Length: 389
Image 1 (spheres, rainbow, N blue to C red):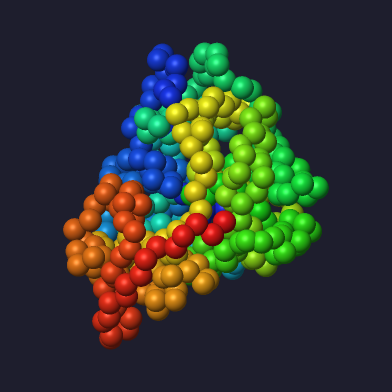
Image 2 (image 1 turned 45 degrees about the vertical axis):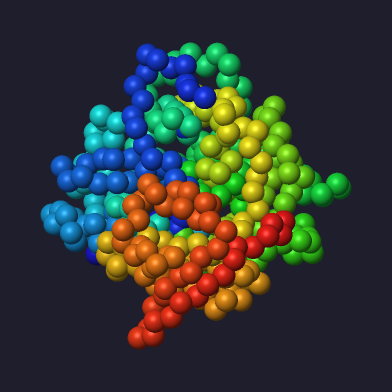
């Protein structure tokens, strides 16, 4: 079989718009943007990812849905992780219904997505079929539209973008500290749950490891391509078009390979920043339209939980610790990447819905986690950290 080389960022993935004449569909905005779709008639929840050129299918979903396919080839695929993975791709056989529009995906990589995003993700919706479309996202009301024509943009600020090879670039100015300014193109990556993640090349060029304070993290799955690491810190400001967001928490990557080590752009920009705007991306017109929404003035918080997890309660019966902050109370208490969380404060995690998880940890000051590590079971209790950056 022919061998192909493909690459995707992945993560591997709403004040109201005045476009009453344009159709908007309900989505879930929880770090990523999730759409309820069908794949060859089978229900699927896909994470929307403008950093992904292709629509990808999770391997577990593919097996469970019993989708039939014949045309497959080998490929190598990289993304936000630190490595390249060997994958199979399905050619011209999967039909997706998204926002009442039908797409036949020319290339559908089969990936292990649930370890990256959790059981709620059945695949990634890329933008390879959207070259002439307009993408509208209302984060506050959790609505999304894929339009053929742009409507009324009154009240929006128009910003030029570069749309090339199924990737969307927008210029940005980042002031780290007085005298340390980074300017250049950034990648609009709606498959990222963060604000701004600077590439490791930019971090080296601007000596970002000398910034104090900062919080170092390591992740088993930073995106497609596996592990990832970096550090959070607080920058003075970010400017996009005429908008300046001050005192912003962001991070830089330590990765030596993959999308976060590249020199083509200075950073990827994710949903935690874009969710402060009503957003319209006109791919054919190569314009980004932004309008501040109700979240615009909200402060950027410092990470306090010390860890993050992926919900694998349906497939593994647990939450899996995926990222851990160095020196956090979670780490000091003994929590490790890869631990299986069975209970939180005595409650079985399988009882906690995807929707409830949105604000669960934010309502707590401390947790007691019942974890499984290999054949051992133990309880790990800790208070969440005071703000450090």
